[in-house]
Length: 138
Image (cartoon, rainbow, N blue to C red; front, top):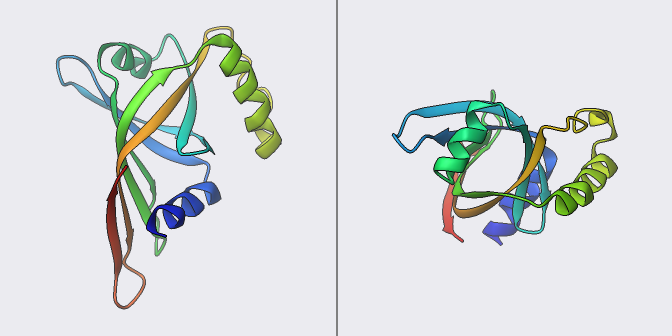
């Protein structure tokens, strides 16, 4: 039940903070749009970004979703891997079926799609009494 609660929560949002690190452990964070399909998150970025270089050197990432005002938050640790161009094309179609307002955002020829597979997740809701906090290893 806890895993379903986390994925239901993630599907309500479309933005996260994605943190990457270079092979020399230099951190970098960015606000990213994402979409959920199955048990994975998918993001899009261009090849000229710091995060793209970091991912090529170190595929471990961390994500935070929510946590504004009294909203719950979800923290995720996992791995990120670049998808093939064919997979990216399919994911673009899928994403635009959910978020048509993002049309045009994924048109860059330098853009690439990535799959994030969670290995650990933590749900925190401090607006409830008692607080709702739980972690799962995936």
